[in-house]
Length: 502
Image 1: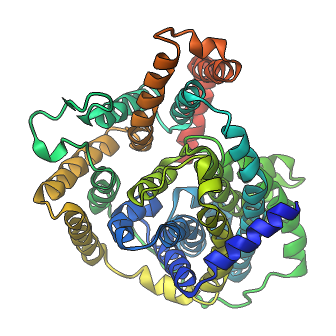
Image 2: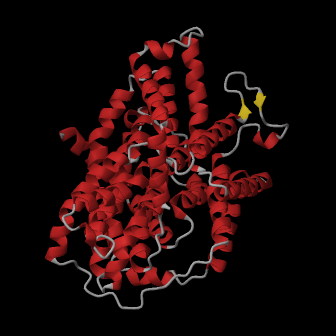
Image 3: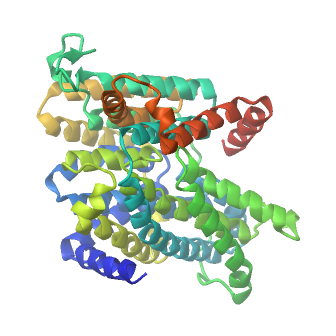
């Protein structure tokens, strides 16, 4: 425990420099803004801002991008409560009781409980990352190529299981992502693969180009066809602080939501997104007065908001310790680390402890900043909702093109963004979730490398994956997950859950 606190002291000294504090504040502010304005979300925003990180030092870049991620969780609750329009997927549940509280003149307590519950959950989750991160990292030092391959395969299967919509479509997205990851030069021979004679992709498809197209441009195209009625709450928000009765009703839901979100955030796929839904269901089931839910029950705000923030924080655990991104946002973080020349995985903690612990310390600093940003500036965020989309989206699109062009000063990159944007729009329109594709694209080359190394070690014998206990266990978990999701009863229940989500 002493080592954890000494390491956190190192982290706070690294994250507490004026530059990093400024980047943390910018990330939290942009994240809140993105959460407030429905349409883009943290995935698309991080994709758009990746080119900016080229000029930043690695720690500062990751602090800013992380701030955008968990800042969006806070911002999404503001519009969910005041406008009945969730800025983020994870804030959908908050609309059920949060907006009802606002209509009853209790928007202040709803916003305060959402912010304070999120801060508490973020603090606990940050401590959990600090506590279990080193343990997992030291355990992962024993991993060989077979174990890494099995772990990544299990992660992709988990992403398929937790992806919304059809299992078959999720499998298709993973296969497409793996194929896109193969484009470029062969890792052993250097021979070009699947480049179709195009010299600009001889070194592979640029991660930023794919991410901006699939998420940024595709989201803009999808939102342009929506006509959203944004009814702004007219009454002035008064009585911001909750009463003692509100606090008593919220304490246990916050604790349960924090625990649930911390566990689900580690899972691959949509674990962090599912956390608020699971929390709301739990609170409603154990409540003595379940009929209050949907009519302004403060527990329906406290639990889910704590769960979504805890899930957002603990999703950094597999990224920082194993180098495995559990969701699309963490895949973006892997891309940012790779751009900075950092190989994600268990070696980061030993080779670059300042980066590892500075990143963890910045999470707590960012959460504190978010409480300060969100509560006093509620009026500003509400006014921003009046910005017309016809002004907002062209500006974002222009920023996307400038950022991507600046990577290699190549017009081909901009054309590829347009192509991937059109493909992403097609996928969204036909019920394909692009997140598994991005995860597979990031993990594909790593899986191929570890698969080849495994076969070299075993002289071509595939039994190496079965003969080693840990890789055999991970493969059994992957097979078990696949069988589980294919069972008719489980598949039907899964479809019902994701239908409720939408």
